[in-house]
Image (cartoon, rainbow, N blue to C red; front, side):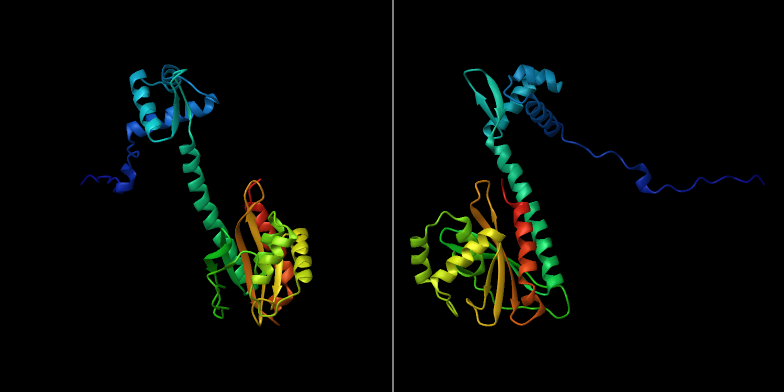
Length: 261
């Protein structure tokens, strides 16, 4: 009997087809790429030639992108240019990625230093807690963190004051209205603000909460204005308490790497 050679059975993955694309989306991306590479404004006909598309198709794409705020049409020159809608979209995507990377970094510090990390947003005259990270270990430090507080209060407040355009008299008015566990004198507070300006991070050692030490830094925009704050919270008398300056240096480095400008 003749032996038959059997071909090995093929997995469905061996017949993998290329992903299907949406033609209109591909064409729109071609137009946007050519507009970006042009470095300025272009007319529909020139863009169509560059993108290898039909002129009427390119015109319809541009009209749609204009309606969606992705390009701007100049009626005087009959040309198109990238619009702020594209910038807003990119910033949104980058912002989410930076937020996730920041959270991972905070989680690593929380685990390594056995402390509680907090992320704050500066809103008008207050700082608002928007996230926190706990040490990922069997024994974790967990405590209730105030949800909001005056922007010049605590460790983060000293850094915000250092980064803000606020004069001594205005700062004194804020200081007199703030509630502390063990209030420093105003002169001590000013000296701590100046120290925060020099180091890039501020420390609150039991002046805000009894038995709690906090070190913080701030993330700024391109003009150097405070936007977000990151703080490490630990119990007084622990190894973390004795490492506040080293932790502060790490927070300042993280904040500087994310800050604008």
